[in-house]
Length: 228
Ligand code: CTP
Ligand code: CA
Image (cartoon, rainbow, N blue to C red; front, side, top):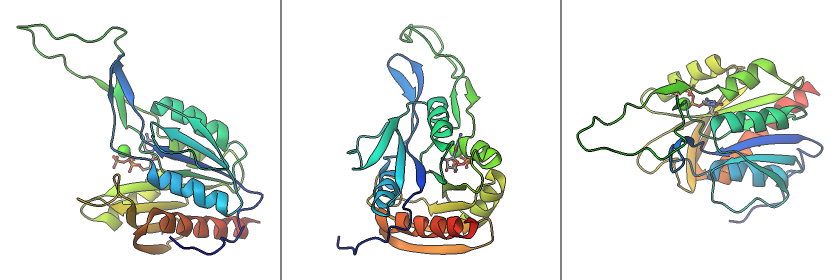
């Protein structure tokens, strides 16, 4: 992939990116997880470094090479990711939540491996809600003028679902992917619409995750410039 020198328009900025997917343990050997690879979040980290930002990458269960020049912090569960993101966000100019955060976790963690027994019913899996990191961050804004970005994978009425989610979360930008057979999960390419709380709508054509990442940073940089 050939690309020109990126403008250092994020120089002097600290950006925080979450990537990957959380795993919620059931017992010492099992967890509830999801299929997020972390590739989009890593592309966001690489492009932000290229644009001059100081980058903190909160990585949840990824198996990708650390992006050169980024500070990488690991988090396993949603609660650990929340802690790491809120801590790094204290002095951040922008936070991008690209991680797939589990909505629920097992209500109880079994300290010993759960065993099956002949003639017994399978155990019911009781779940509880995880904290919503994006909504909390959007409401709290640890730093004034901080730009908060979410990601959403939607089916059916993608734009209407995206608009409703943007309003519900209270973030500045929501990157909406349509999920389907060959889209988003694990793939190298992505197609999206970036919705703004200001009513803006930016279509990003099917292409490398770096291109979508650069588009997100364009929109973030414009908002940071507006806020001074
Ligand atoms: N997110 C988060 N904390 C959660 C769940 C989601 O911070 N507990 C963030 C994700 O990182 C993403 C955004 O919220 O940036 C949207 O995630 P999504 O799963 O689409 O939103 P939900 O509100 O969980 O909606 P749904 O019921 O459709 O899963
Ligand atoms: Ca969810």
